[in-house]
Length: 308
Image 1 (tube, helix red, strand yellow):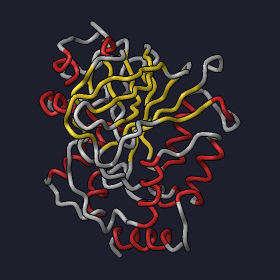
Image 2 (cartoon, one colour; image 1 turned 45 degrees about the vertical axis):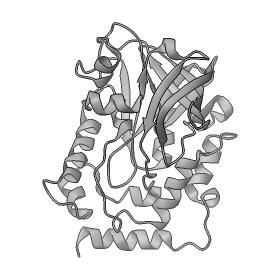
Image 3 (cartoon, helix red, strand yellow; image 1 turned 180 degrees about the horizontal axis):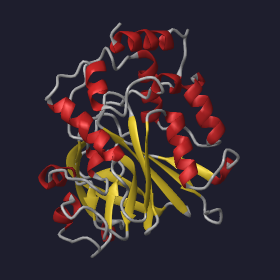
Image 4 (tube, helix red, strand yellow; image 1 turned 120 degrees about the vertical axis):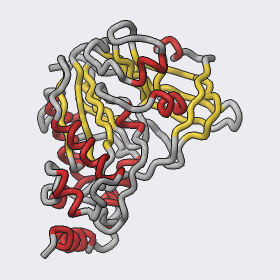
């Protein structure tokens, strides 16, 4: 029997649950136990639901630009494509009254697989993934699969700890481990995300109405990577960064959005061809680089006074 047929049976079995909502799935129950008092972001809840009821083995995987992957330290994204989104900016722009031109594309929530299924589907071998998900060899989709696996298997840069995960439970556990927080961390660790609509942000200037530092001692950021199902690359950098919650208002349509942003203070170890350097007219190690967290990305924060 072909691997995709076996996995299709497994996915069908996972979906045969009467009336499940995001709130009563095993992933949501795990979230509540691990992060009490932290509501699950809508994008994550949508991904959990999609992972149960919509098999990535049935839905055709289509390659697309991943803004999330463009913010990683080793990014090689096109500076032109990144510049159009406005995702990178200078820390000095985070002041009320300043304006940023943003244009975030619509993004579908990736299917976050149930943990038992995520442990069975292929991940580490590109050829197995391509065959299982009926991806045409040599296609743009196949290239994205290989690129994501290459990122996950590449060593971290100096001062960085990273991991790739394929279920929500593994993502939370990995982040808490990086923060030095065990299962009994309770309210010492919480999660946050940008409150972006699935439809993205229409291109227009956005006025900064507020920018407040996120109260935390340590931060782990988890970025979605392009793949047939949800894969998160989580990392923590020991070389310093700051986090902000930024309130924006569209100048033309008055739309309001709350964004999570990170400013990396030491970029000396980043890829010299990183698009942020060209977009912001700077060089590795010269000045902080800030970016917004895109749709479906997560940050885990350990409160001050509890840092490992």
